[in-house]
Amino acid sequence: MEASAQAQWQPVEQVQTYPVTGDSGIDLYGSIGERGPKVGKEVLAIAHTNFKLTWTRKYEPQPDGACTLVSAKPKLIITYVLPKPVSPLSPEIKRKWDIFIAGVRRHENVHGVMIVDMVKEIERVSVGLTVANDPRCSKIRTELTAKLGEISRTHRKRNSDFDKVEMSEGGNVHQLILNLVNGK
Image 1 (cartoon, rainbow, N blue to C red):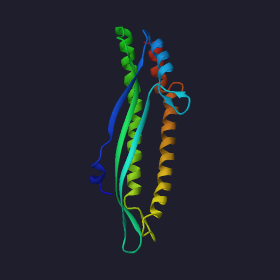
Image 2 (image 1 turned 180 degrees about the vertical axis):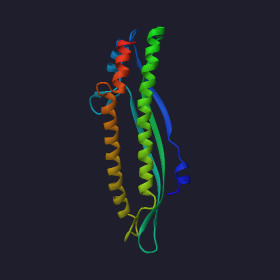
Image 3 (image 1 turned 120 degrees about the horizontal axis):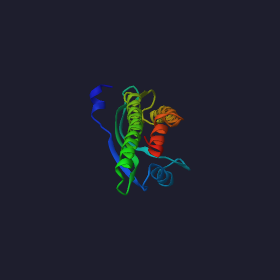
Image 4 (image 1 turned 60 degrees about the horizontal axis):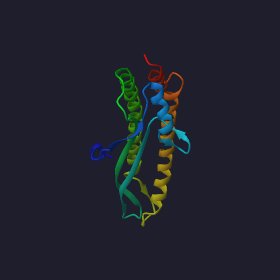
């Protein structure tokens, strides 16, 4: 696919916040633990990146009886959910919070980049996909779904691997938490 076709779309990024309270780093972090977004069924997170992806696809039957996916245009909305203190913070706690939340944003932005990468990969394997003996363009949808499942599994593993490193002892997110609650 030519680069100009991919350049025609851009993700829409939005930020949602949830309220946290506290007069110290440890209190703020405790509030995050009580109010943070749920990821999965029970895991509470500091922040979360989610997305909504829809496609406009054009399938064309070919003269030889094949079907080709000639275009696939994504509409991608990435939503970052972040904590936000509801009350003014003391200068010392605000300084620690600003460092913490900037690092959390950087972490979540990496998840956003991974989502965009996944959508570009979907686009790459979709456009031009051709299935023989498919004059009604039904077999191609099954084949595409199988390819999308593999891309999705790869995306989830990439995100999980990134989080494991970032949140492990000594990892970036772990350091952000320690700096918030203990301070420097």
